[in-house]
Image (cartoon, rainbow over all chains, first blue to last red; front, side):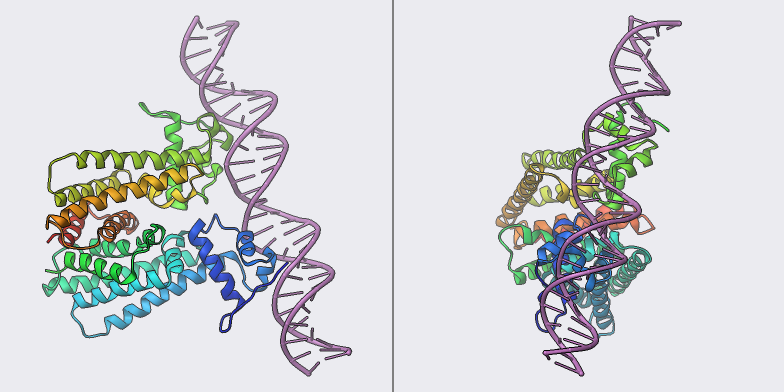
Length: 196
Length: 196
DNA sequence: TTTCAAAACTAACACTTATTAGTTTTTTTA
DNA sequence: TAAAAAAACTAATAAGTGTTAGTTTTGAAA
């Protein structure tokens, strides 16, 4: 029928993961079949198994790869010397950038992680909780030092993260909003909302 | 095996819808089978069809019922005499209240609408776009009257709506945050972020 | 207590699912 | 060009899907 064509510096597995990523985002993980993915690539479904271990594995790798990028960045920021408010702004900007540059994968990591099989589901949820706790801690320090408005840091973290992860809407909404404008506006609203 | 027990002032259909709602939220629409719903109620799957027309119908009714509640409230606010900022605050509070009081249904309407069959999918998306356009218009008027900070209203709407719909995280996160505290903190962050 | 409709049941259908086995084709290596 | 490895194919499996048909049970009205 056909075959998988990989570009330079990318394996055939990458091609599959990328196409799967697109479909998982558009239709959802459970609503996307291996046949869907295969057809989109131009190949029969069983052929995919020469390159990947399972459908679940694709999801797992997408979610954990994204999680790693966020925790790596967080560690970098935590060890830097800036005000706590600046750290938060930095993290917000990173989230927005990731949302724009790795849209499909971030979206899946945000919306489809439920379908991870154990023990990965538990692992993922722990990483997520941990990430939020670290963010809360930065906010709390900022509040203590009167840099940041006295709000519940837990609520603030939820507000920040979910407002950013909701940028999904912008892709769909016809007139694509300019990335830089999006970033500056969101930072304005969120940082203004937080700072004293 | 068993039977569906309806409380006063609620039909057996309501019992099915409510249980389905819980499962759709927890596992996702596609990952929830009619047998799952039936088992949770204590009945065989085909018995459900004495009360509902299809699985899709359940989803449809959940989504459109929630959409109606939001558009009804919006109309009310639009015809009221308050500043545009006050209108926005009012709408934010309504969204938070809905999120708390109709959690499962709002969550599904936010996250599972993709799986609506046509022509409902198109209808739903149109309603959604329309709702956001009306919100944008209120924001724009507020900006013109210098009540509201000069941000892109489209971005502001996305930020507001997605930050609220992300409250989902709070239920899961062990220590349930007090509803009133949640509302006041979110309003503080968002309204502070918007106002001049 | 008989009647009748509502609501449960079992059995089954037609389809889709992820994945495996075994085979053939294609590409790379020697 | 011959041999080996990679990657495609077809066929099939076992499990799960929403839903229908036909039948029995249940509960209320007569």
